[in-house]
Amino acid sequence: MGEVSGRWFSDQAEPKTGDLVDTLAVTRRFDLTDVQWAVLQPLLPAPKRPGRPSLWSRRQLIDGIRWRIRVGAPWRDVPPQYGSWSAVYGLFRRWQRDGTWQRVLTTLQTLADAAGRITWDVSVDSTTARAHQHAAGARKRGICRPNHPAVSASSRPTMRWAGPAVG
Image (cartoon, rainbow, N blue to C red; front, top):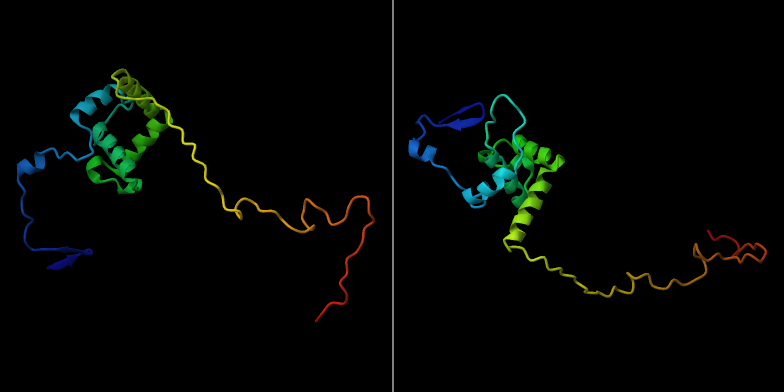
């Protein structure tokens, strides 16, 4: 074995996996199904950019957005099978700014409500928790507080002096 530009390599060729493995569509557990994609695709805006076609399909990019939101990872950690992180992030931000995500959510909620898949019950939690006495602002003692002056407005100013300073 030797080293070339910081990477280890072997003199043996990498094993070939075959054409079948390279052409199989790999579905991830949380990627959109064909049925979900058939519902979502008509709700998406038409591509506006003429010219060279994108390297990644919209479905790949949306699966990348869904992966990132589900996992909570940084955008730069989006796996490459979903497209470059900048393409995934760019589509997310573009549709966030123009309101596409809000329109898709509203339409999907309307469809689900019409099919009876959403229950619009309201749940209100009225739990009350008593605060500890120190956290509730317990009574302050003494007269030297900002809202309670040491001298009343009707008296003459006096000087408090405890005697000669020590030390």
